[in-house]
Image 1: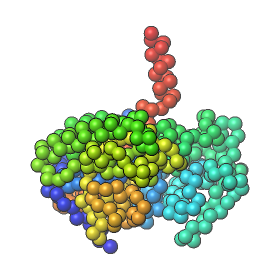
Image 2: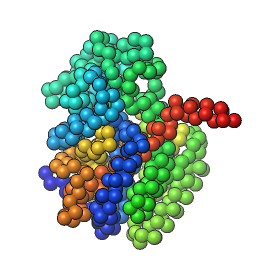
Image 3: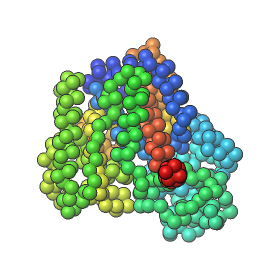
Image 4: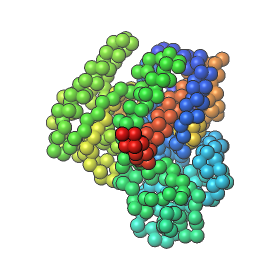
Amino acid sequence: MDLRIPSAFSAPLLEMERQFLDHSTAIERWFREQWRGHMPPFYGSVDLRNAGFKLAPIDMNLFPGGFNNLAPVSLSLCVQAAQAAVERLCSNANRLLLIPENHTRNRFYLQNVARLATILRLTGLEVRLGSLLPEITSPTTLMLSDGASLTLEPLQRQGNRLGVSGFDPCAILLNNDLSGGVPDILKGLDEQWLIPPLHAGWHARRKSRHAAVYERVLRAFSEAIGIDPWRISPAFRVCNGINFQERAGEECLAAQVDALLADIRRKYREYDIDGEPFVVVKADAGTYGMGVMTVRDASEVMGLNRRQRNKMAVVKEGLAVEEVIIQEGVHTFETLDGAAAEPVVYMMDHYVVGGFYRVHTARGSDENLNAPGMEFRSQAFDTPCCTPDCRQSPNAAPNRFYVYGVAARLALLAASVEIEETDPDRTCAALIETALAL
């Protein structure tokens, strides 16, 4: 299938892509310098939106659950990148415990776990799967739709180490985003690598914090190549003290929506963009596209009906929404077979390893595509995203994907800085250092 992406408003984006291509040497040098000072997350995925005049990451996931959607040709890139990640964390690691989400009935997610386990085993690791489900009291084999199988085992704690029966791992990889909090069995593990660290879970992480760090990273990047940061960053605002069921915080929400829309309109006038700006109101924590609404006018968030309030009030694990991020809406003018589409880029260590398109036949270019009814179309990165071809046009596949890879890596770098700055141990050390200096 031809997966070339037609894009409206292509001229401004082609100009921006050309700028990326012309500065590719400086860009790669800049990234290399950044990674010398920051530890990349083990893995991550980034949702991008391409509006023609703007290309921006709109979500950064540190517990990616769609490795099964990558094209088979991506497998070798994944294995090479995973090998680099393992060597960076623990060069003598030989056993790894993978802890997945509790989605034992979600066959697509289970296929993701199987693909991830395959990648890890191909790096030379012995991999077992430990489950947080209380009903998993003995090894339980689940059959997958493609004929493969997974065996989940109950976790066993021995002092400060975690494993499964007869298996003491060097490292523990979480593919569970901890939306419901940190289980006691995962606390206080100080003798094994826990990847990602616990504070990267959605019980503690906030999208607004990531967005603020991304803006800082982007300012430095933009200075290096001479580009307006707005072209690759969604502006945002935050509201706390929200209770959709009791209509608490509606005034704050309406004021922030109105202010952000005004800012976007100014940028549209600056770039002579003829389009209707919008914003996306999201729960400040969580994933799976829950707690998301598109807003075009501040009046739309006042007096939400019962159905709208119920939709926004809770996210994964039934957690109540008390904080929201109001994010600049970025249209997607990419389509596949006439349906709205957006690219999702997957990374391991600091390498882009593949991607796919999220497609929704019932959603428009200004709506959330991460919703029931979405489909995934894999895209084979026949040439890695780090190898643009300046002899071809800016929108040729290797060049378009190179630009996508740059945007995704910027989000990954921001996530790295975010994890460092929110590390509880680092925070405690800074407080102690400050107290000693007084």
